[in-house]
Length: 356
Ligand SMILES: Cc1cc2nc3c(=O)[nH]c(=O)nc-3n(C[C@H](O)[C@H](O)[C@H](O)COP(=O)(O)O)c2cc1C
Image (cartoon, rainbow, N blue to C red; front, side, top):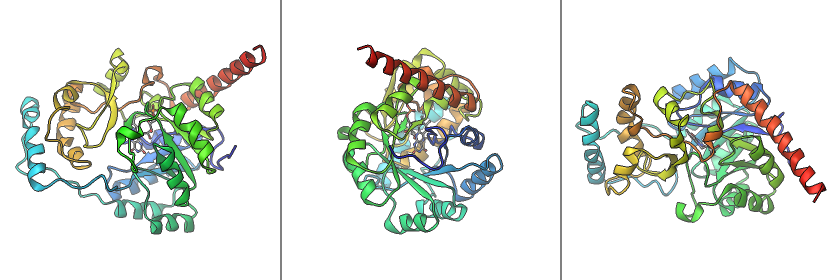
């Protein structure tokens, strides 16, 4: 099996926009795993600052993660954008916030975010939603930045390997947050982590990371047994001391509501897995949802106000199917428990096999 030079333990903390702090990234890297700092929704200057903050907390390697623009992200027409904006007016009225005259738009560009990554030269650059162009990948190679792409299908893993990317993270159906299939529609790309990882390790020779529903050490052992080089774990860190998850979101994550997660595009225009709530129920059949990333910027003021007003029914409560296993502990302790649990589970499997 391939190993990765920056891992002392086979645990990667998944990049989680809006939930990850420099403290979380540094804690996981300091514990021997790989922390990942998300920057997909951040201004270049914010990415620069957060990389510096992380570096002040660890000398160990960590990843910086961005969203790649893809062909599926064609912008809405002005009319469609206005209709999607108008559809949100009742929620603003209910929250008592102003309905802006103009729909909010993103000023972010992948190229500018990526320029900051190149300048900062983190040990690892990971990305999702597609494959950066050949120039960007060449620049990473020249700067000796290790690259990790995200795939939801075996075809995407093969495309990532062919593009010269160093490793691939296979994101299974169970995963929390956005599901960024880029070669086929999402409906054809929803494969469970076990089926996905076992086929990907046979199809490519670059290291494979496994993501989606890895909630404790048993699942870490399982994906390593399938041939993964490491487990990329997201939701299990959402309740960690270092997570940025705000109180209303945290409260839902610690409740039985997490038994009902669903894939929805109502918050950002791209499908993502989160806890079902009122906004999802009411908006799912709405025709007026702008494509990604425009819907993300349209709903942002609503989500900000809902956080401030303690109204989780209007929040994007991104999380995976195994979050019920998450524990409110320091991140280093979570890494230690994942490893101890994996060893116990592996020993159990060996015993079961030897007495069979
Ligand atoms: C709150 C949240 C935010 C996420 N944001 C990102 C992101 O910015 N970039 C990314 O590549 N993946 C993102 N993901 C997906 C994770 O990388 C990973 O695929 C997922 O967490 C794995 O499934 P799990 O949550 O069941 O462990 C996010 C996931 C969550 C739960």
